[in-house]
Length: 65
Image 1 (cartoon, rainbow, N blue to C red):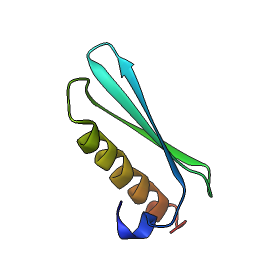
Image 2 (tube, rainbow, N blue to C red):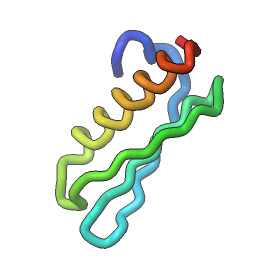
Image 3 (tube, rainbow, N blue to C red):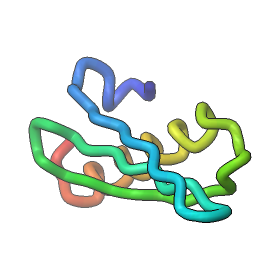
Image 4 (cartoon, helix red, strand yellow):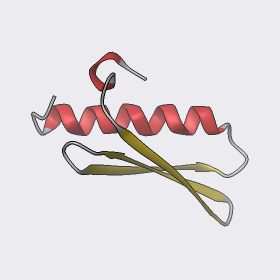
């Protein structure tokens, strides 16, 4: 987890959708949720990291971190 998200409670969920995996990440404190998609056979750790990077980006853009 990146430094700005360290210490925050983040819920991550994986949803297989046909050939794609949808990954949702929710910041519990701000209730900000994002989702990313990738290949269902892709590495879950890579998909998780992409979701966390996007969540960090959105939180920074909104001025929440």
